[in-house]
Image 1 (cartoon, rainbow, N blue to C red):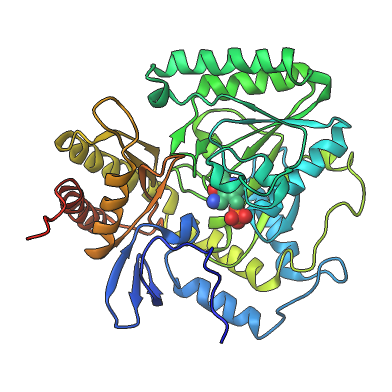
Image 2 (image 1 turned 135 degrees about the horizontal axis):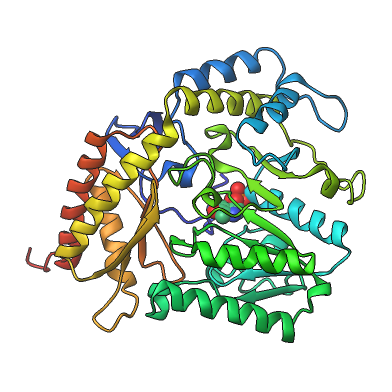
Length: 423
Ligand code: PMP
């Protein structure tokens, strides 16, 4: 009898049988408050009735209208309706299935459109697991070790990670931009540099928001040298941060935007968006795939757009995110092991550190497990796995935030005082 690969790791022992809103239920019908949202995917909550209805209707109409063979209406309508939320200049979209695949589509576009070989990425970023995306990923060696050689042409420059450096944001930003200029002078000449690829908030790398000055600095350098600015909004898009896009917090517009996760409420769908004149510089036929822009996923994405608008989920993410952040900071004030609480909107991380600021991975992992035992599902992130993150669906309301916080405080308490062998 075949079994699942042992290389697939699972953060909790839960066997999910069904989902409803912010809750998951296991096969014994035990209820869990799901503050993982399938790694930031189920933005409208599990099985939102309007998503279910749209998907069911589409399943009965057309499941797979392969888009390099025929065209179908959900894909055309979605492309058209994305202009409701995309920056105005980004008026051409290409659809794929996963974040990694979209990142690689963006990479191909930047190289073909500029004729330049290299990309600059930022320390601690996560862009995916396929070899090209893994080569651009420095959120942890587990995503890259042991299967080299990775793709060439990737230069890594610092991200303004103030807490890690022990500096204020201004000093961290100055350092990151200075090092970027140094990289452009020492490792990749501007006219060999196709793109800067950046997350508005480091996701897997530990929930570290960028700074406005840092992204503005990237924009200035990109404009000066004809380098493209690619914003990886795979985790930060679709209202997650309390604004529709993560970059909306910083007043900086990218040349290429990469989106996935929250886009289709759980159906596999990703996209890149870029201006028409940029897309037209790449080669016809360089975009495609068997499953991209699946009709059921597109129907779910259209319903997701409607639900986010009609239920004011972006505003809700801002309000409940602020409430969550405030509660997490109160917990951190009680437990010195939590050295930092940070994030934007409903993307909040608590970093566990020891007295000298060293990562305390063991306590973070215990807190995550203790929370799961008490019915609150969480994930960790960060290079050392010592940041516990909360990414609830955007339909979360104040009572559920408070429920999660009360479980969290108990879980952290249990994590720092593990039961003795007698107890
Ligand atoms: N970019 C970012 C910022 C991500 O968070 C992720 C997934 N965690 C990816 C890319 C890769 O997406 P996928 O797992 O769908 O390939």
